[in-house]
Amino acid sequence: MLPKRLRVLTVRARPGHPSQGLLQAGKTVFACALGRGGISADKREGDGATPLGSMRILSGYFRGDQFAGGRRTRLAMAPIGPDLGWCEVPDDRNYNRPVKIPYGASHERMRRDDRLYDACLVLDWNIAPRRRGRGSAIFFHLARPDFTPTQGCVAVTARTMARLLPLLSDRTVMRVVR
Image 1 (tube, rainbow, N blue to C red):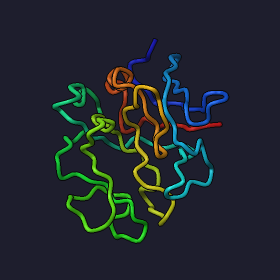
Image 2: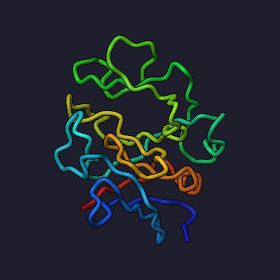
Image 3: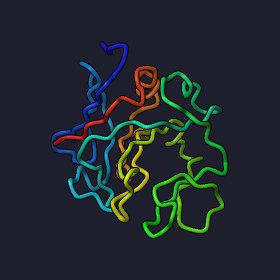
Image 4: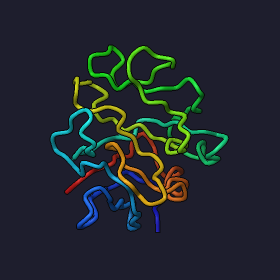
């Protein structure tokens, strides 16, 4: 059973599967995908690892045409338009920030064909202060059906995300532990 509000989501690797995890919300546990590099205390840009530590959920993005539950939350949620990107170049002034595409530096497109970001929550990893090369675009988003690894994010099924969103706020913390 889930509580009415969630203050902490605890994530740990699934035993024997470092790129798959278990996300605990209250007394309920959900499967999740982790980064291809497992969980790391020394997160670096491009290593594919999910950062070890506590990260507050700041806000989110959703595709209203694909994920109807995107507005059923206490979080500030913005629709994902075709021009929304996220800069991933450590030397760029907009590193680890949303950008309008087309954008000159390498960036991630938020409106994805694979629908992984149909519901995408921004975690406060390396947001303030931003440290060059310490990792960008660490999100809580939707998983592929077989829970294949992410690039460092935590990902759950659309059904799980729809269950969790109404219980989350900008006070919710995701704790990634070993």
